[in-house]
Length: 457
Image 1 (cartoon, rainbow, N blue to C red):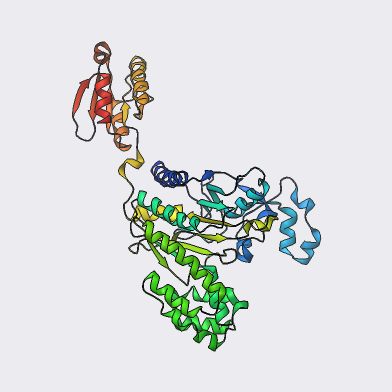
Image 2 (cartoon, rainbow, N blue to C red):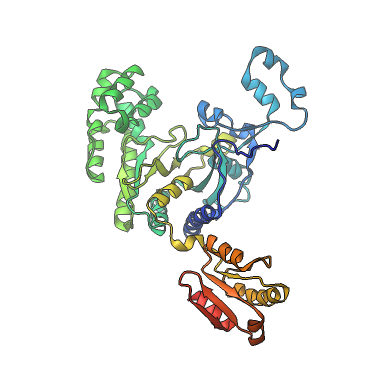
């Protein structure tokens, strides 16, 4: 019995239309990256396990796809680990490589490994697939593409300003209006934790604060109390729970809350610089919004934190994000190399564009002309014309078999090919072509030059 075909959960096949739409997004993002001066690099789909493990926290380590060593890997396995039922030791003895989990850690490895060849500041972009052993759900897959842009070797806040412009440029090109670029700063979060006497519980504090819009003020306070943050400290947070209004008014409120924190005030200064610049430069379609609950990537972000939300009319999680990291390359021995970067969530952007019907009709540009095959003599004559059409930038093809006319016409209809060309003895003699418009049903006999013009027109 033949095996029933299937693919692993969390992976997908893409049909021609889907690939065309994905390429439309890829090309839009790539063009913007290049327009802003970013250079492309690529890294291997798998890295040494030691490069990836321990860089994403315990949860990240669990989601990394490990690759079994080739050959008889069990003969070299750590037998003591089996006896101790130590899965970490067992895994390390039978797997030395893993599929990349993101593009950021491989990029940090690349920078350190090639530091003598790189001209700093180094602006790079990377568009490649990554893999995570996550639970598949809407907008979340086990194999997906990331589209990253980073600058390393510069502490200038002008880079953050440019990344906001880059986001805005891409979403303008995609005609995706109503996007919100949320921004926060790690220094502000650290400052708040300092003010309430919870500097040693920064992660617990921010994880709870990040849930404010999901579970509400009282539940957040309960969670903070459960993590050992004092009632006195939580009472000092009260202004945060009602923080709203314009960027400027929120900044003023934060200045009051963080008046005793040098680090917190530094974060306010950085955000003010970025906001002032963007206000002067302007944005086309996006909105810049301060969100003090934003705490993504807190393990390695040290300054600005970005997260991009889809238009409010679409139920979708973030479609992009990033931030400033001052020592990411330090994990590979290269200290004090500051960087900042952002990522576009291709798959979620695709779903948003699909839901809002924003893909241009021309994206899935199909074959425009199909030549009907009446036999070898006619096929050869047709292929000479097809060669000219292709040289003129027109997608054209010959039906490969001299099948019944009805079958060939049905093939053109099913593939939504707008023009069909018929070449018989009379056309060969007169050196003309009978072209049929499949949408209107109109038919005309024209020269090759006129055929090119009619299809282009």
